[in-house]
Image (cartoon, rainbow, N blue to C red; front, side):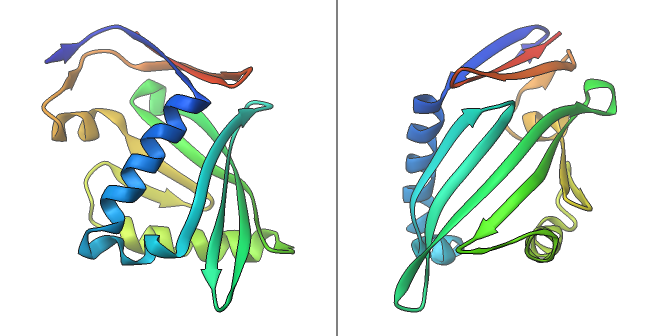
Length: 156
């Protein structure tokens, strides 16, 4: 399959349904053992950011977690930058926790094609990941807009 142009709009419901299905599938795999500690994952789209909320089992009490994420085209549309703009874990937040999470993410993606971490940003080489699914992207990611509970991606 070759995609040259694509305008894709997803709603919060679309994303949350996919998120629930992915968590359920991964939690049953050997790699997903840690996902069993995450409860009620939800995404909301507002103010130009994607907000991820969940409860993490740490000890006997669930701890609320919230991350605000910015999505932007990168490398002249060949990549997507996913930037952790804000992270709060229970009543803690700030750069120290974000730095620890991003360091763990950098270790997890090290050596994986199409993925890299610099600072608080995960960069995804879109074409490399699409090719893993047998899709050739002839276009570039030109725009991402998060408005009124939807996210729109424009490939040209």
